[in-house]
Length: 84
Image 1 (cartoon, helix red, strand yellow):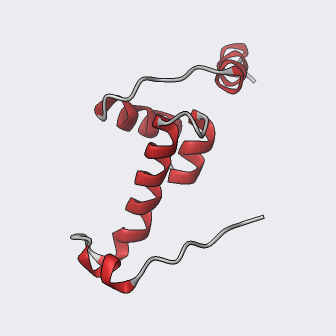
Image 2 (image 1 turned 135 degrees about the vertical axis):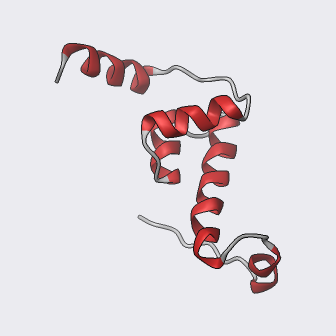
């Protein structure tokens, strides 16, 4: 399943970014907001933002958002630690 959001042209035009960056920045902001409200895990939020772990983690830290550490993050860390 996928979803498309409809954003009025007047809103898109009001965003003070080059048109090539608007979609990516909106995805990042949505991912950050959902993660901050604990509606998405770190992994799913970074997937939505189309960012790597380090890059998204750095952004979360820069925004002063508390990191949530759940089962998915634990499994990722254990996989990384085991060298797989």
